[in-house]
Image 1 (cartoon, rainbow, N blue to C red):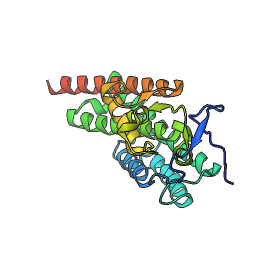
Image 2: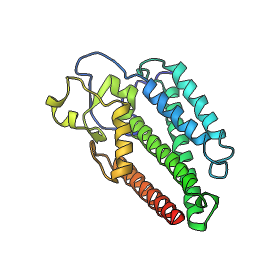
Image 3: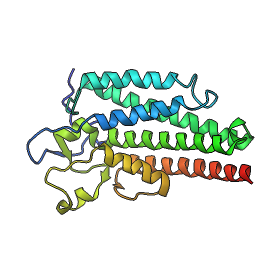
Length: 236
């Protein structure tokens, strides 16, 4: 069943929005998002089973099923505002976030208690890098899915008060008419927030966006700090 509501998670119920300025519904390509999910799934498979939730293939398999539902339900460009697709997309993001948090928590536990990952600097750095990238992708997908009700909603209507204020939205001279953020824009936020521990491009406006970026920055700080400190200690 198609849900014609213009608001979803990440948009306030009474938040006004306007139709696309050019009057055309042109959704963004789904393939960049598909590539990011596949990358996170493959990276998770490379992790030791002791760090993952069940066998290392279990969560990626679930992510693959949900990804297939989205690809076949709305292939090519994202324009369908169907409730089932929205639920599947949010479930996929939740699964990615859960997997990233679980892996991070287990690695931090090993770093604190002296688990197997701490015995080899090369293994520690590779494992830490994988989990770092999975966290960045998970948060990028979270921002992409919740801002303005999601990519399908943004294709139909432009939220007047977006959760993230991109430079192109604050200054119309920086982008063509009808510009909308794509997945690559949110991936940039996810990566730079993990490295800089603060916004570097788009500014969070909604409280949920500020909270999510604060959580991501904290996770990244703890992860990078402990991994690098332990790796240096092992090498010396």
